[in-house]
Amino acid sequence: MTNTIEFEIALKRVGLTKRKGAKALGMSNMSLYQKINNVTEFKASEISKLHELLKLKSFIEQQKIFLPIK
Image (tube, rainbow, N blue to C red):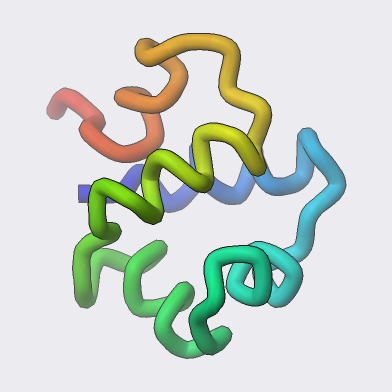
């Protein structure tokens, strides 16, 4: 489950738009929208790529976005 707010904050922090993020992942804007809004799930390979794109410094930051604790 993706924490939508944290994901969008991380995008803004590195100066990426959702459109550029989708392109970097090789997916359509709609596919990224569905993943961000928990209609579908990110694949492990996509999370790994996003870890690099979003310049996440740790696994904890990654978990905060992609595996939020309720």
